[in-house]
Image (tube, rainbow over all chains, first blue to last red; front, side):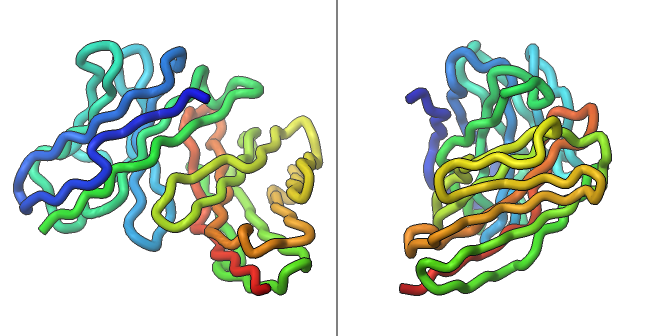
Length: 117
Length: 112
């Protein structure tokens, strides 16, 4: 069964450093997402991406965050200057069509665990 | 925007009993309600979902019911087993938006 894949699985970085998390969505999917989950808390929406541009973003997704799809396969999340509170599991997800389409759903990757020290 | 409230936050049952988790949502235009199971350190995995054109959906020991008038939906697990122990999240989509908003999660413990 096709899967969303993410790298790295774990990353430790120093506060203030830039981090790039990478994702390969399911190949025929058109919509891509990043979610964040702080340890022990709920899954929080960060951003959705379609047709090479951001379609929606949350208040968490401030100027320190950016996304891009540089080569048509990888979908990346960049955190420009990491803060301690960015420590979390970051999940990439994809869907074939928009979530409002009947019968469509969202598939999550295994996550990238980011620790900022 | 959409707000999804989930309760209880923790639920402890004996093996073989039923478990029910409830969620309420605020946006009456919401029309898709999935449930995810998350085991420790793993990704959320879709276990069942329902769209607003039906009131109930069942898949073996798992069922979801939807009451659009009251704006709430529930997950029912029958004949619980220890491997059902996990955190369960409900989610909704705000009307007109392409994003899932998750509830706070319910930690289910099934004791042998």
